Image: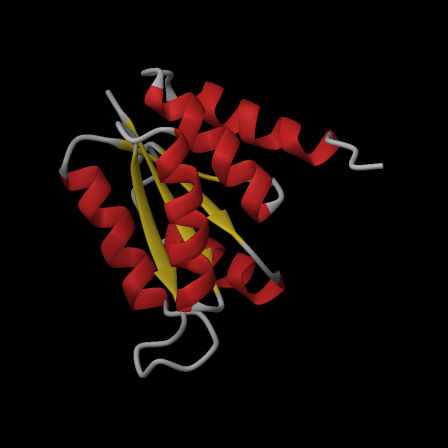
Length: 129
């Protein structure tokens, strides 16, 4: 089973940019950017997130969801709470850019959801100075 990585940002540009960056490092992985509101403003769109997650599950994939800012966490938790208990979906507690790259690269190796989540969450500990 493959892992699809869904990136939920308050900005469509940020979601696409991070997806482009991560996708260039692992072209075989599936990365789905979800950013901004339905009318193009800054914010999160629960319906778009639900559609992205459902599309992944319908394709037979496990789904890792990474989010950028606080209210995106709330949006993701709300959407994921409505999924069946056994749905192979995880909300990843990782920095958005670094975690996305780690998740996508790990997913491209064929790793299962638990390993993708673990590698993305390791990005929390990356020191930059």
